[in-house]
Amino acid sequence: MLEALRGLGYSTATALADIIDNSIAANASKVDILFKWNGKQSVISVLDNGSGMNDCELDLAMRLGERNPVVERQSHDLGRFGLGLKTASFSQCRRLTVASRKAGNLNCLRWDLDVLAACEDDGWHLLEGPDENSTQFLAPLYAAQEAGTIVLWEMPDRIITPGFCEQDFLDLIDRVERHLAMVFHRFISGSRLQISINGKRVEPWDPFLTRHPATWSSPTERILTEYGSVEVSCHVLPHKDRIEARDHDSAAGPDGWTAQQGFYVYRNERLLVSGSWLGLGRGRSWTKEEAHRLARIRLDIPNTADAEWKIDVRKSSARPPVSIRERLTRLAEDTRERARRVFAHRGQTLRTGNNEPLAQAWRTEHFKGGIRYRIDPEHPVIKSVLEDARAIEPQIRAMLSIIEETIPVQRIWLDTTEARETPRTGFAGDPSAVETVLSVVYGSMVLRKGILPAQAKALLLNMNPFNNYPDLISKLPDKPDAHDKE
Image 1 (cartoon, one colour):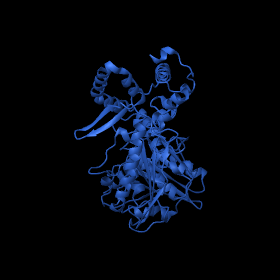
Image 2: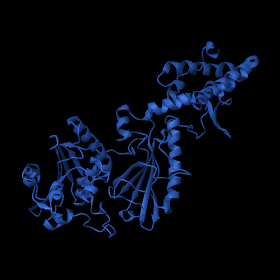
Image 3: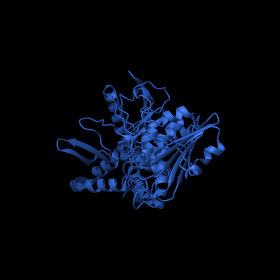
Image 4: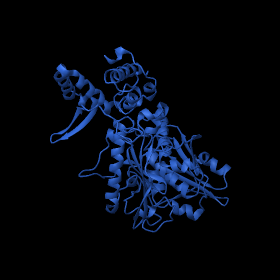
């Protein structure tokens, strides 16, 4: 049975998160993780300063399923099945040693899968004390603490596989750090818990960039259910152009911008699901698409909802009950649409300070055959050119039609998907170009159309893409050069 339980699907990072859950349940404020490379004899240990366990408590903790999962738990409890310590550990190693100190008394038990396999009587032989070669790894608990627990993984056969080298071990440490920074970020940022890996402190990763001024956040909504209150808070992160380059990669999350979109399900502030649309959608389940990469929704559920949300042993999957799926779908639809607009417009505002819509050069047309993009003839600049064209107006309209019908939509889509960003538009990175075009448009408005300079500047501020350059507009002269109207 133990060999079968090893295949539950834990990664090293999710397994360690399960161990830390027990530390939090024991009121630990500090968790130190040690990765020690020694080939197949490498070890990983987790030491906390929690309340510890006496001999009876440790004996129960080392049993499989020592607690009935249907029994009501305390509101702050992070466990459910009574399997986490064992299944998480056995998924990574063949020898599990747990030592704990409480009230000055030290107790130590271990499971060794090789010893169990060799037993002829098929007995469950839980061994006392550490292996004779492992005492050194328990020294931090023995020497420095009045209370606490250390979990030691030895013979990590599911980690150190053929071809696995020291660099792979170092890469594993990085992945574990990113995962723990995400799963426990609310504990770490609240200063309730300090996690370190080989002496380096793990910094929290906030999926929602709540401190960034350009992040949109909805008010928290509480949905009352039979099993308690579910809290929902929707967020749309800023476009890349609004985030400093040094922060953009870290804001993406462990799996990248596209993979990290969706719902973030928390249970007692511990993250269970990081970026999933939870099977929601209209007609078919939503998939993760570039256009919605900035949408992230926080969901807080109580531990009384485990059965209804189908929380699994690994605490890595959840599925909302039918009773609230429609409400969650509507909230997600709104958030996805907001995120799509921010992504498509590069975080730029679509309205002026007077709440009037900006004049856009392009418009979207929906028709029976699908969707197409058209140049808007009512855009002030385009309308002015068409009015002045006279004899060549048909040629200009023909030219605009050719541009409309030859937009490289597939090329843009591929570039956006592969490069993970929208192509440069709006004179981005070319200030001299916008100054030249702005001067020509302004000169035509004032000199040819007879529009007052102040009114012309106001019109430009309400016109895409010039609305992004208010400083340049304010510096335009009241008397433009005559050649600017050409």
